[in-house]
Image (cartoon, rainbow, N blue to C red; front, side, top):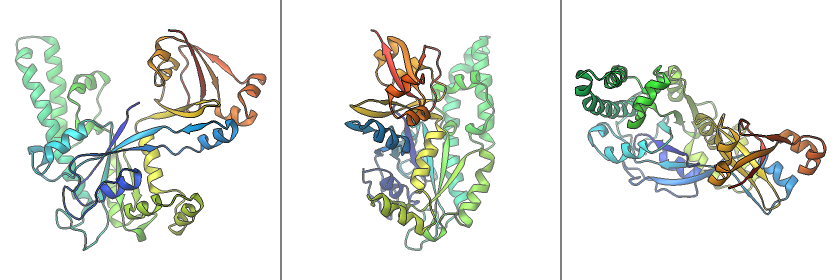
Length: 365
């Protein structure tokens, strides 16, 4: 599955530093706006201890984790919706991602310029929200323009479309993001073709100085209070510390480094897992002597659709799936032992795949 999370924020908030820590791709990080012009893209492995367990039991030739694509998008400024700065490019790039990682500056540093002159996470968030809302309003008004004349001629379907679009327009005009709006699935379908920016799910990253780890500071606390009504998550990180952690390849050394800041896991691992959860994704595994591999699917997918992420032929010619629960596999330590214990279930087309399932598909094309 080609899943993308876009890292966004004002210039000089630490986006590229965070991206560098996330990815082996090294985006240029510098103390001036628009350092990132073209979006940098990094494929990031999802940390999953279950893969290590399966590796020790199966002893495969290779282990392949599941991944999410992170996109480091150019910094946005006030007026972006009207094309200011790199606004048009920024907004076009956001339109292509599945979820937004909104990095907000929550540290003071006289050596790093702030685009608006002072550290104010609430204002920074509102600047980006406002620009995205304006762009969404523009998209909605264009669609209203296409259907309004047809609706006034008496076309019931067009009238319903305009009615729904007006509901979205009124909501945005109050300064609220679409993601917090109570809309039915039919209403969402009507606006789905215009890919509203403020409808995308979001995680806020409060970038703090290292001595504010792990709990944050007054800026990050203010951000948490502000977004509480959005039902979104705030993850506190220090991008500069995360960059140092990412350079440590030895796991014991990394664990000691984390301990110095009273952290049990890196902020980036928390961010990666939160991104995975935000998109409502789960993992199933295939395990054999050639490879142990994790596969990403959406929660509540049925077996044939899950099989399709391996190859479309698996979905088209699906016959059945052999399923072993992860806990059963670790208890009995092998597929053969699971079969002898009656812990391999044979599932058909209606089986809903569960997180951690170990699966083998049978198909015929």
